[in-house]
Length: 318
Figure 1 (cartoon, rainbow, N blue to C red):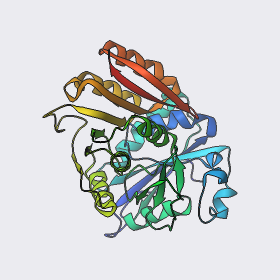
Figure 2 (figure 1 turned 30 degrees about the vertical axis):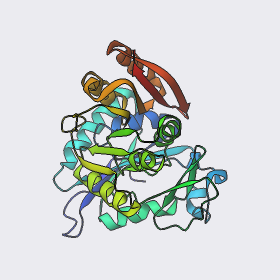
Figure 3 (figure 1 turned 60 degrees about the vertical axis):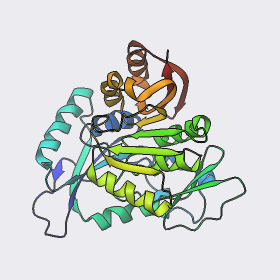
């Protein structure tokens, strides 16, 4: 591991991205995720304490991952060439000091997009979430059992594989709240996984948005490969460019607490009296902040789920 050693510079014409990877003690992971999300919402989280062979299908996980240090965790963001790496590092160091992460170990590496995408494959295996949905990597073979709905995903350069708690929380709630024929909105879609899951569960129309053009590209590729024709995905800064021609029956926002709080005052035109809003990406310590904002804006929490320090909320109008 490289401690405060920045390997920056000219990586050649084939290098498209710079990886900023930060490692902390496992108990500090939630704070690190919250800070790294301020740089990019597309995160790669390495938390090997969370691996459970009971939830994995297909081939065994790579031995190096099974033997990894379970007392530490890492979070990476990937910056395109036009982003200033030095500015991001300066911002991160300031935030680390502010919250007491002085021992955070930071490294930067130039990386090709193809290499980044392939790095997921060592630990991304089929995983069943809820009662029906099984998230399967595009490169894996999987025979669905009776009643299972398979969602094939290739995360590419976008967040959203179904392996992280935030995504699992929303997918479990999607199984409960998706009604056949409903109209669904996905804010901050990442890989497109939630819109695809909603479509598989019977949503008639799904509209997905992300501020990151790369995420939109990846999501559209996943949508195309899924064979689903009722999903559209476009670039939008939260709700600013989203279609508000009529309210949605179901809205998902798997982002972070601060962004959810910023979005809440603007969401009313997208909801009718029976709309269910699913919020995730919230560390448990910030749940009360989000709930307070929800209530101030005229909504009520109808369900709350938690998993490993993360919180998901189902919200409706009062």
